[in-house]
Image (cartoon, rainbow, N blue to C red; front, side, top):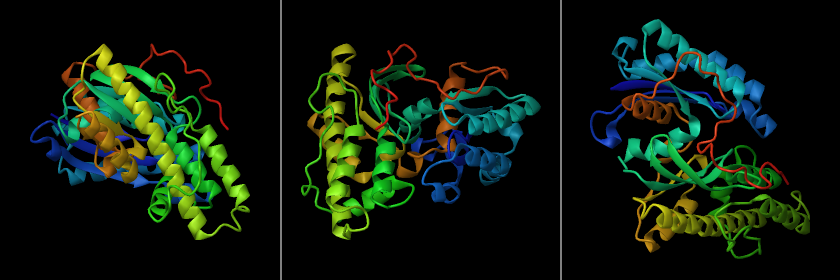
Length: 357
């Protein structure tokens, strides 16, 4: 099988072709990703209207390049998958309408993929990982712990009560004057810093369950900056140390919450095949190292996509579509793009979710 996948849910325009033939690491035939970082950098965040207009301008060209790099034509495709949500609705609409047009013209099966499910299944594309496994999904818009029991079978064990972890990284970077996107800058500066210099809170550490909260940590960073005299008077060493202390606090929280989720997973299902981390923040090598220590202590494998497949990309969408197509899970061309689309629709709303600090 060969599938085309289209991703336009945030600020990357991407298209890719994947196949289920061959070894897991050789299944990506092409994966073209056009970043919009420079367009959004002046605003220190993603501007939905700018993102949607960029997708509208570039999606056709990106699809054409992906097809050319894979040396394929539409007649060779077995189906087309697209990120149908959740995400910035303007961009999602662009991708969905493009995919519907191709499916209609070439009479191809159409799969509207949950963007979060695509992250959840990427390790099956890259490593052939078997179900069930525990997933820590950490990105700019999401922070969740889920049991992944099969395609379409997800149970949320924990979620953030306020901010997603990627947002906390970006806001910390903004307060420190490091620019956008902030996550990679914080990670880079933290390598030279002293992670023990400043005392920072570890929100939710040791509490029952495995929910997250990061607003208090952001507030603590702001107050520490104020004590240092503000961004204008801080030294480079101050910034490096704050980044290192922030990352250390996050690492402690992730390991504590993931450890509790592993206990919940084992009590309900049995031992997982692996601890998996995915999403944009999963590219952070320090946090991967901390999670690898947790996995090793539990005699588990830590599985994570290559950094290039942690951020949004068409390959993960195509693979999720391929997995769904194998099970006969196709969608009609009347599918409506979704700005919100929980992986576990039965999960109760998190108390305090959506509150920003």
